[in-house]
Amino acid sequence: MNTLIIPCAGKSSRFPNMKPKYMLTHPDGKLMIEKSMEKINVDVFDRIIITIVKPHDEKYEAKLIMEQVFNNNSKVEICMLDDFTSSASETVYLTLKKMNVEGAFVIKDSDNRVEVNFNKQIKNSIIGYNLHEHPNITNIPGKSFLIVNEQGIIHDIIEKQVVSNIICLGVYCFENALDFINAYDEMLTKKISGEMYISHVISYMLASNNYVFSSILALSYDDWGTLSEWKEVQKKHRTYFVDVDGVLMKNCGKYGKRNWYNNTETLPDNMETIRKLQDDGAQIVITTSRPEEFRANLEKILNENGIKPYAMLMGMNHAARVVVNDFAPTNPYPSGIAITLPRNNSIKEYLQ
Image (cartoon, rainbow, N blue to C red):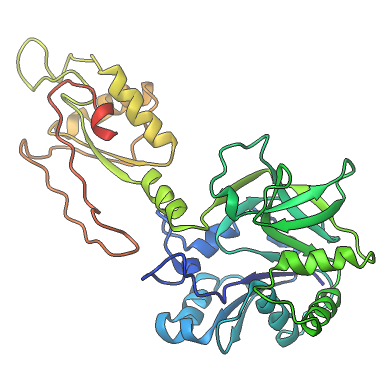
């Protein structure tokens, strides 16, 4: 039996004054924990266990929300611990024992998205990422690093020290739950000071010479482990309300020699700027005073420039447009931003 464990028993101290990070809402409406499972082949798992704590349940209805989120997945089980744990390794240890997990299992962080295909027969391994091939990774000092030989066998895993070009992505595979439990029990008897990371348990298992772990490289990786990284996701997925005349196209009106019926002259730099925002994840809503009869022609011009808007609001008043939105720690101030640029001018510098 294969089990996937997602530990969510930490205090989320890096996300102050917010819900637990695994319950935060991604711009597309899904919770972070849903996003964290998007690119793994969950069909190889017989059980999926999400471990939460009573304080989060009492304050944020964590259990109810997890049940609502995963109500169509009969594999998902909720493990409720009485209180916060001292480390992810303790969370996993308690989960294994409380939920009677047997056989192979995988630990997966709730604050990232990793694209990887698991084999049905799970072996001792750690999912890594090559920094030489993916140099744009943030928060490098906060990562753990894998020391790997040419055959992909892991010699050691080191926390918070840059000792190789392979980072650990917080996905750990074990052939047998009992191996983890026994190693953790042995480490407890040694009274190791400080937080006991999952990497420490694996390092201990490697040092015993009884276990071999291999490195498997992920296909893609999105990290939301810090508040700054999460804010960057929110920034990329903003909704932009974009006017047409004077912003995307040379300004004209319904009447005159150049008008809505015959004008096809665009502002190429602005079209390209908006297209890039869209390609990075932004939602584009077109707002225009042009009436409904011009929708098809306008859509054709936008599509030719690579812009496929989420929506087009036609027939808007020829007057100021005001966005009203609420703000909170999860959608921080300012949650409504206005840009007013001179007609037919470049929008790029204003966005910066």
